[in-house]
Image 1 (tube, rainbow, N blue to C red):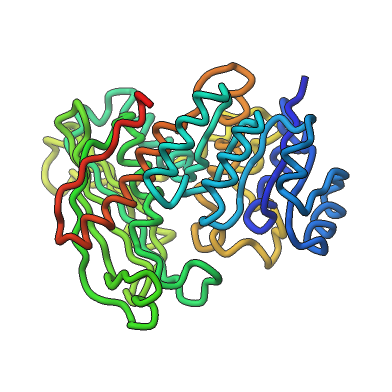
Image 2 (cartoon, rainbow, N blue to C red):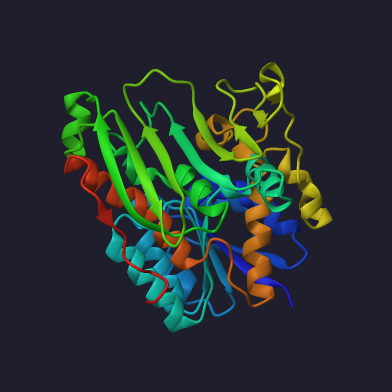
Length: 372
């Protein structure tokens, strides 16, 4: 029997409609959007009959098995909690929540409801991450010694809740890959702020920093990672990057979009150590009907793709991989990756890193989400 999926929020969320329509285990059952004109436009375009302007009405529909939340960041925690308590599985775009307490509440609601929760972190399903994961799992990297990631973006002109946002409050795109590659749990974090943004932006969240850079220490591991974020008043082309240093090989992200990443191989003659590589696509991991979505935009494929998708270079072909993981976890009755505890850990790294920056780099320990 196919799972009935409901998508909540139809800006970025509409990107996923055709993927669920074509996935062999799902029925793209319902859509939810407060604006009835937008709701009906998308519903007509994709032939979806069940339409809701009220999220509560959607959750009251017993036919809905799972919700995929793509609403604004301030709504993520409340909507995830409501859905879990209504007995629905939850996929939610990043970040999981805006406070550590909200993260903890979602982990508890998951356990109490017995339902699945997955934060839809694009980077850990990007082709670059899948490539590095393959290098790690086949032993080509050798012993991993260090991980690094960045997410730099100019968010001037973005709407609503984005202006002045503390950089680390939207950190999962760089925390996810450094924690996710070896399935590590962040233990504590220390973060520094650097530079200042314009006063009118800084005043919104009382967050002055242009750049926030954090060190993460992982639990039960000899590894730490370094991540940095900027959102305003820093000259940089959009870049989501992660780098992994092993004792046999290392992977470094390209500096400029459309260039190639570099593999460094130990013990070669110095000029031969670096080598540019072409990262393959991993559509073959997916059911055939959704393989095409690793290389094509989905919604408004001509000129009107969602800004996060166009700036993010298509999110590395991650969308169908995320959908397939969420759906497979429900069908197979297993934990998705990342599950609620992992999502809470990754999100809380950023929340607490910003706290650390405000306190001059003070070390802050993360709560243990796995035993909640």
